[in-house]
Image (cartoon, rainbow, N blue to C red; front, top):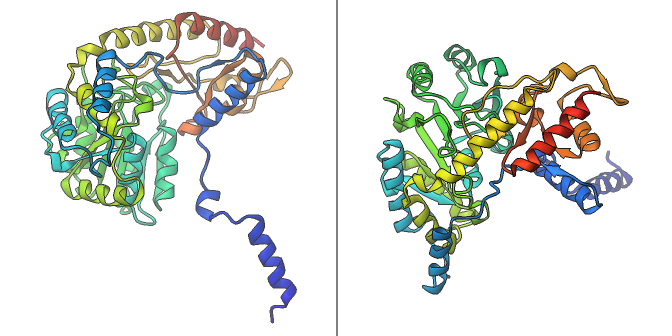
Length: 410
């Protein structure tokens, strides 16, 4: 028989941690955590160069800002439709056709408060407990936790710098089980910057053809920050359109991170389900930001050339400087604005009195010794690497790489 004192003990335990298992089991975003730590150290007077966050250092183009101002003047200040303004959904359809050769209807488009919400919506409406989701690693930090939060089981498929951080058809085939429900990936990839070619996606598609019940989430948020000269949406591969959910947004390419607008193109039943759940969570995205986004997605991508050219130049600068650091292994990323060097040669060493066991130690050592904030590759599913963004000035990048080189010299 349970005594009163036992009930009191149980009640005390519950009161000491009243939070749900759901939140207690959720990992903190490593990128946001490192950015917060860097800000804290800066506030203490430390000369920190923060390369942890993936945010363009450009301002939103003036023509988009003018569209936002016009929307305010035209009193777009009321609730927007849950799935987005009809005019914006039409514009997104035009963008998909123009840039990707994809024929989506407005009923297949859902506009959300950032691409991260788009991904969360998808997981919530598609996954049941125990459903497996293949994640080619490295992957964006939030994929793993969003899948877990939705009851799914993340299945990591490892890659390395030697394979340009891309999975092979054989690896994909080996990862598929009777429980596989989805595959999520990004191209250009955050964190590696790798871009899958049409030939590579076609080869993966031939594997997926055998498994018609597997759905694909293609995160294309870095589509326009692409140095390869070509871009292929996996939804354009024959046989995959009706099984692909294409995720995109305006944060990265248009330097509109604070506008918080993402969107999907998806089979209609999935789009309707995403609208249903969004209606119970946030409802429609910001009205002013949506009106500005119409102008952004209707613009010819050539308006972004100056930003893409700058990122390309910085990529070359950073890769060149990294290659001068003994022990660093690096691929040449073809898109996004990140590098993902392999730092495993430093594991087991002692640098200036600090024992280095893993990539997390390397990242924390660089913060303490070099005053440079990076993110451990563990957060992205690759424990041998660290990620840093080159979305900052040449001067800061040169100084950061000088500090990193000096610190890793031991």
